[in-house]
Structures are given as C-alpha cells and as structure tokens.
Length: 269
Ligand code: G3P
Ligand code: CA
Image (cartoon, rainbow, N blue to C red; front, side, top):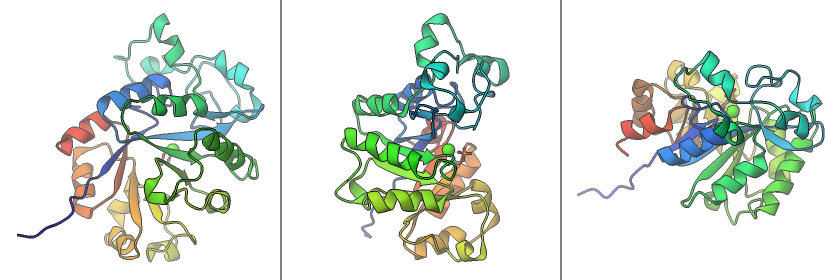
C-alpha cells in the first residue's frame, strides 16, 4: 500500500458566489460561505476618503446605479448607491432583489468582509487583490495592513498559518506587502507570460503563482514547471466542469471560481 497525502484543492469564491448574486456584495459572500467555499476572493480599492472597498472596476458604472471612479468618491457617496439591481437587469434574471436585500447589496467595505469571515462559524480564508496600487503609491497596501492588524491578521507565524493572502498583478504591490509583513502569503497574478515567467520563475520572494486559466490551457508544462520550482498554483477563473477536471489533473492548489457550489460538487465535496 502506498501512503500519500491527499491533495485537497481549495475552492475560492471569486468576488463571492458571483454567478448567483451581485459580485462583491455581502449577499454574494454569504452565499459563498453557505455553499461551502474554502476561501473568498475580493478586489480592493481606496475611496477618496481612504476606505478600502470591494469593487473590481476603476469606476462604479457597471456594478451600481452610480457613475464615477471609486477613487473620486467618498464612502458616504458609495453607500448611497445600489450595487445589486444591475445583476437582475444584465446577468441573472433569477436574482431576486427586493427592498430587504438592500443592506446586503450596498457597497461592501473590506472591514465588513473581514467581520463576516470572522463570524462565519467555520474557517474561511480570504484572498485579497490590490487594485490600482501604482496610482496610490503604497497607500492601498498601507491601509490594508493596518486593517489586517486590527483583526490580528497582519503577521501570521508562518505563511502556512495565514488565513489571509494578498494577490496582485503588480509585483511592486506584493513587495510592499512583503516588506511590511514578510510572513503574509502573496500571490503573483498573471495573464501574459514573459519568457522568464514561462520558465516557472516568480518575482523574488513570492511563492504562489496565480495564472489565468487561459495561460494554463495554452502552455502545457507550465504548471509542472511552477510546481518543480516549489510554487503553489492558484488558477482563475475556473467555472466549467471540464476545466475543474483539468485543474485536478494538473495538481492545482486553488481554483478561483464564480460558482463555488457546482465546483465543490464536481470535486465530490
Ligand atoms: O483572482 C484573480 C482574478 O480575480 C484576477 O482578475 O480581473 O477578476 O480581478 P480580475
Ligand atoms: Ca480579482
């Protein structure tokens, strides 16, 4: 008999259970927790008055009834907007949005999301992606680390012990995080492969690769090279059953998906 450690793929809800509920809202994250997701993914941006909010786009136009850049609006301006009803209109006619849902579909602060995770009643991890880090030259990371400190999450004993990780397409953003908090895990996101990256190398000190599914599909051998170099691999955005199977076959460590429920079922969990 061979004794082997069971490889358990982590299922990460991308912007919450964002196929079912409006992305980056409390409703989407509650649904993801209910569905059994191991971790939640969120994008963070800074408001004009220095709050970290969970919004993907630079502007609020697509996902709310307002207009303008997140960075030009204050938290109170964002709190007056509806981040829910676009979903039924544009994507999911089955999404029932009533007046009672208002509190769950207003703008979500990272602080509120951290509270939700703390109160989940079971371990749930958080994968936080820093957006527009060059424009704010360090402020996003600084605010993020201050907030994590308030929750006792900024300085884990080791990366393996950390329920929070920071992801970015910007190596500079990740280096800022690492300089302030060396044990916090960092994920380098990529949607294009330079020759250096293609060899399985990551920017100095970063141990987790976050390639897009397109990269994984179109570069056979890439995941193996990353693994051989000792890196974990977290892939986004994996929604189709055949792609879940591919991730299993390749030994991917985390699947980032808009559909945590169906992906967990595909994995037999
Ligand atoms: O989880 C990584 C993925 O979210 C990166 O792309 O554009 O969805 O933030 P994006
Ligand atoms: Ca993201």
